[in-house]
Amino acid sequence: MITPEKDCRLCGLCEGRTNIVLPDGDPGSRVVFVGEGPGENEDLQGRPFVGKSGKILEDAMAEAGFGRSQVLITNTVKCRPPGNRDPRPEEMEACRPFLVSELEGRALVVGLGKSAVRDLMGFDGKMAEVTNRVTEIDIGCTRVNFLPTYHPAATIYNRDARAALKDAMRIVKEYL
Ligand code: URA
Image 1 (spheres, protein in one colour):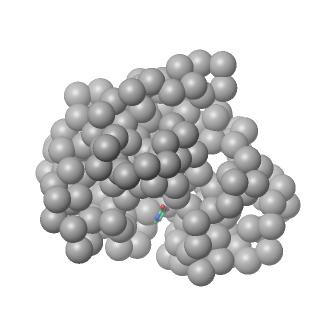
Image 2: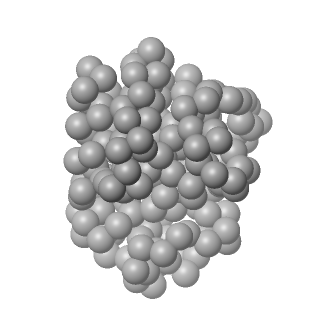
């Protein structure tokens, strides 16, 4: 895996960040989770999915019988977008070489939410149309299995989405 320089200035997100948020978990895992981008807690701690979304994700994993230390967790961009806005295409593009190096050769890539699904799968429709259907995507010069599912934050007030996220974790377990 390649990582950004400590003082990375490849895109404008460097202006507002406290910490670059690098992948967390098992670097050799067969499975990698890709979120949208760091939020406030992640920016402060320099670790992905440590806030409310992280708790939801960890609970769903635990229910399926695995933990975050068994997978790799990363984001499409490694620095927090101001006010938690969606990452812009040029910001994702600047961070892409790092992401590609994190995803190449995995048995399964899990896209958490619309931004990751749009970026990795090129799908910009309703999440319900693709959720939990494993498909193949191109990553660098390779093809990998891709599981699009809901972002944990999207499941806070949506029971069906929460149930779908839990189903997704059961699919993930089969790949571990
Ligand atoms: N939401 C994300 O998409 N990524 C994080 O790391 C935290 C919250």
